[in-house]
Length: 55
Image (tube, rainbow, N blue to C red; front, side, top):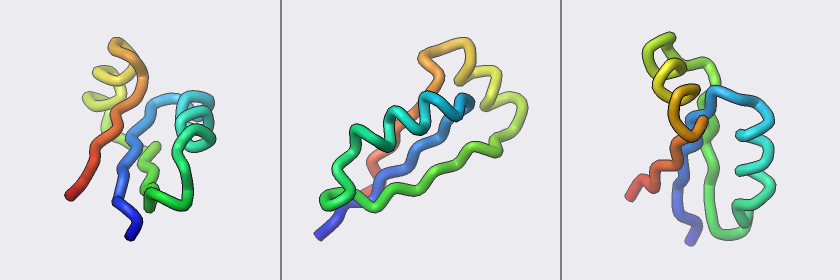
């Protein structure tokens, strides 16, 4: 059974890099790139992405 995984990314290149590293046979990946300005600011001033494992 695949585990759900959410990627919220402020950068398209980071998102693509993360997606290429995540095994598609183990995870159902949901990607959000249109985020609010506040979230985008936090993402850009930190590591640029957030992975959240949703049970």
